[in-house]
Image (tube, rainbow, N blue to C red; front, side, top):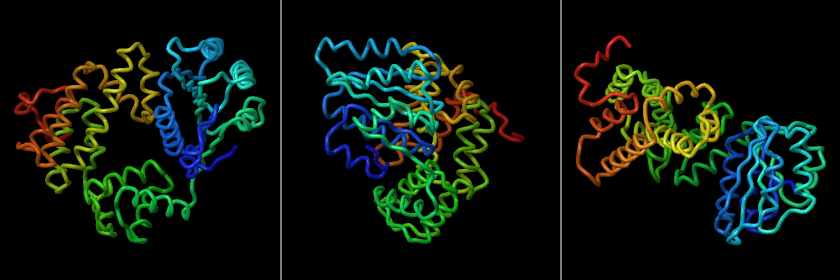
Length: 347
């Protein structure tokens, strides 16, 4: 059964199907639909999870064998198969077709991918999946659809926005839903439960200052401590809200911690980075940062993020800017005590 992304959550309330295929060009909606499905599945007792990636022509035998093995504890299981290139190949296609010929009980199959090749959508396994379960395809939105989507997201975030303000966001993000969501998250942090007009949007966008919070996180991940500190000082001079800086740093630290934990559990670095959905252009920075810190150190930085959050909310006393600087230097691989020796000019 074909279902539109914006109707997927409602479809889940009608009961889980044995198979879901969620794919398309708009990655944010793919991720959101998958998250909704996983959440609903957990609520219904699907506690086991097996993950396969169809970027190499192996694993399909293990997939079929795993699907035949009942849990020792009678637990329900999710089998997730990722198609990073939007295709299955001959062996995986046959394996999926075999599986869907007689789906095992208490098992939910989720196939996730980028835009599927035309041949995939006409394949035997895909037709079975569409008949037995739910297929969701995501596509880039036109400007009118973007207006509606942004308005809905802002309302869900507790924001009331003028049509003009929504138009400014749509114009800025140029059809990129992920960028739009990030702008809305920033607005929600800066102006919680508020009326959003043009002035609020203009003051919050990333290019409204000489430096952006993204410049800060990039410099920190690269290990360029002098540049990172200079950018932080520039953001402070331009009156950028600490809550916005903290939000950006926390996002990066949380991602790095997730990757480091995956590596500690035995995942290959490239696989862990891919699973964390790191943007291709940021992969060199992420790899650089992974070499500087252990998994425990990233967890310690997460604790620092939590303390800064309490400072921002007034639950603890302290100097927010010193704490932010300490966090930035930690990410960059420097100790706060070394700050006096850093030349922050000329970078």
